[in-house]
Length: 319
Figure 1 (cartoon, rainbow, N blue to C red):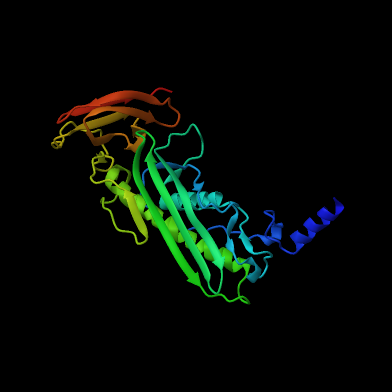
Figure 2 (figure 1 turned 45 degrees about the vertical axis):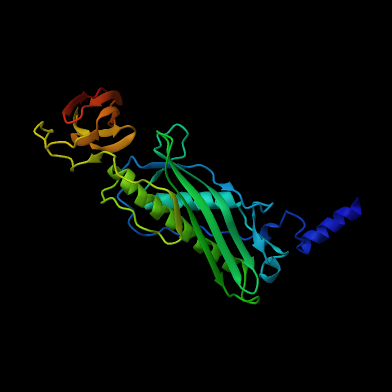
């Protein structure tokens, strides 16, 4: 027994890759992503999102492993290149930070109202040190609208790159930095593609003109084909809304919401539209209305919007 223990210690100290456990100083630590430092998209408060943990489908055997060639990397021992976190955690954190920087309101609380859920599969996340360093990332992501259960967007972002470092110039810090850079490219393309699609399917969440733009490296599997969501038609008026309004479209009606006191937050179907008084063109049908104002009780009720007609709501908030 004592001989087996000594043998295991020798294997650890010599960097034997046959063991899954590596010393703390023998792993690659991915650095924290620096803030973008750019202006986020003008998304409204209702653009809430949560991340469902990504699935690691790489068949690596070890979720912390990203590749081989560690013997050629300064600071590492053994043939395998091991990260300090599992691949799913690294991708989850990177995607969450990217979406937050884009302008989405990320929610972790289980009882919070969330509009979208992001989930996906890690098909490839590898870094192999050979004559050249080869980095490959392939991640499939799906955006789901939680209220309806509908898949709004699904796509695959694939990146593959190489770099020549040479055995003498390759260290684990360089590997960590390069892997971080490639992961940032993948999350940026994912965010761009999702935002472009939401401009079509949910234009009321943006103060932008809807449109889909092609993203290099993104293969779109599911995307909206037409915009049918309600749109906030103009900024908050200074005076209470008047019933003298322009004509609606063939399938929509006008909804006028006044509150006492004014400047309360208006939510329709769990989507934030603005402060009262508010005038909206809405699809005909029954909508869930919520009115919130600090210091007052939240009011919730159902409102019916009639096709080609206007509906006016007067809501008095109670303390």
